[in-house]
Length: 245
Image 1 (cartoon, one colour):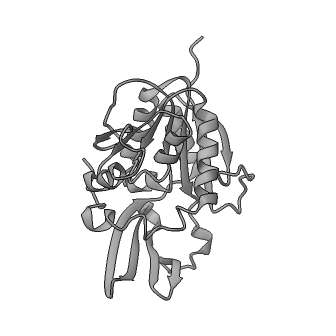
Image 2 (image 1 turned 30 degrees about the vertical axis):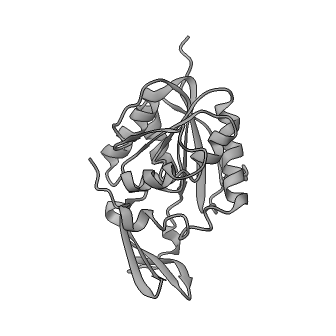
């Protein structure tokens, strides 16, 4: 099982430290996109966390289940109004199975990168496919590696620079690996949080999907369905499980 980096210290302030993710416009566009794919079917969220997307999606009438590695993150989910009827399995979403089949499986906010080997990322797609009903969809939201912004010889990219918060990635381009470094001030003291990740290209994800028996249905630059181009900083990709003839 992968290491759990989201223990009690991170979980208890995760929502308040991630306000940009919780902006109504961000959450609303995400839920609209996912609800349209789920239709009258069920949804399964890999890395459900504190329920940022699962809770409002469930409130839209989509039955939602989840898998997460962190009991502490799930405890934050359980404390939210309306979350008690969301079933969550504690485990690694690359291998943990839950009962039933689903119209939609989704994995948002770069979390595929928390799976730090290619083999395990392939297993993630296989696990998603195993949970999908024929005609169902697997959705991933993840950043596009911004290696064009990395000057020769440099290994660091800053992604946040605020008076009370600094964030940067250190990258090993040859291995497709990185570490995200987060430093911030909270209640008068300095906090730190480091997480390893594996960055992955859209074409590589498409091949992983094909190995799992899925095919690309659509790819967008964001949840609002802006066109995906070579200048896009992230993508929202949808793969479909074919209906057997």
